[in-house]
Amino acid sequence: MDYRQTIAWLYEQLPMYQRIGKAAYKADLKNTEAILLALGNPERKITAIHIAGTNGKGSVSHMIASILQEAGYKTGLYTSPHLKDFRERVKLNGDPIPENKVVEFISKNKDTFLNISSSFFEMTVGLAFDYFAEEEVDYAVIETGLGGRLDSTNLCQPILSIITNIGIDHCAFLGNTVQEIASEKAGIIKNKIPVIVGKHQALTDAVFITKANESNAPIQFAEDVIDLRQYQTEDNSNKLFDVWLNNKSYINSLKSPLNGNYQHENICTAIASIETLIENNQLDISIDNIISGMENVIQNTGFFGRWQKLSSNPLTICDTGHNIDGMKSIVRQLGEMKYKQLHFVLGMVSDKDIFEILTILPKNATYYFCKPDIPRGMNEEELAQAGFKAGINGLSYNSVTQAFRSAINNAGNNDLIFIGGSTFVVAEVI
Image (tube, rainbow, N blue to C red; front, top):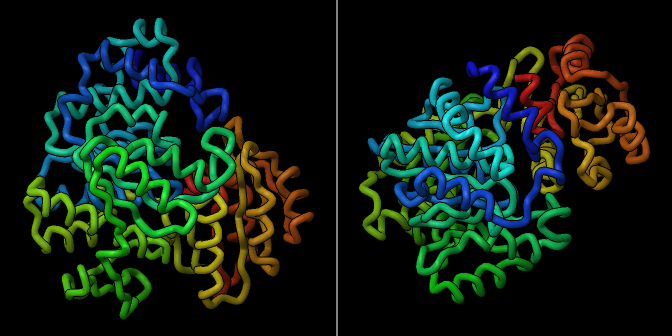
């Protein structure tokens, strides 16, 4: 098989959560254990930094990888889902895994995968671990896919576990309360391995502290040690911060190209994580490495789709936030902006409880309802009807492209176009 055929086989022959949802989820790690055993247990040959959470885990993963790269470390980065190209999931120093490596891996192990009835995600985790071990990376930054305790990535052997914020998402798999979801995320906490939690949350702190104590794992909340003070926005393209560590000035004028307000919390989490590894003598990293890593995160890691500016006339922004907490952050930031009219290109997936999200969206925007081009994509008419019940109105389009083009045609120079609701909508626009 060539690369195109290999990717087609991955997508079409085996379950993939991003395509079919719950049917792809497996409630144990037996398959992944069998895959990794057949591969010679590559997870034991890499030094991992493991990251879970409802929102922010992708951002924190990319920030940490960028800082490691700036410090000269050979850095693997595993994230999901991808936006445009499958190879985005597995990167080495910011470069996607070569096509021939994907082809060789699948060709060599295809029979094994079929015998095990492997899922898309299980195979992809095996690919990442195998590639990073083969390349002898210094560090592998590993983002969980779904949950933590039963996520295929949880077989890695980390030197640090990181948990970003906890919100309501993937309830069919993880639980219906933030405490239940936090318990699944806490499953990445390992015996005597330090853990960083992004922020205090009244309903989840005890979950993480209890699990850490049971595991003899030192625990620290990032917001207890890092304080980020924004003092200027530089021509709307970068945000500038002063960073304080343990109430002492640490970094002056830290520049971030990630303009989502929610990134403040993620920056704190990433820096607190790096500091923990420095204190434990596991990293040799300077403040200059941290500064340049943050400033160059997009170029270093190919990080896209988070409050990304697509054009200026009219101002067009996209963001992959898709659950209630992510959308609340987006709506708050939209409310801080100045524009004449908001044009909102909106698409969602059918296995989400969408009504609560729809009710918080701006009522005075013009909506362009559309269906992401995946089997799980919600029908645009169904989405429009749900939107009408939630008090938002607009027209329906049978593709993201059509919806986006209509928004461009209708928008004036002083208007704002926003594209979101699903990672897959953003992927089609980018």
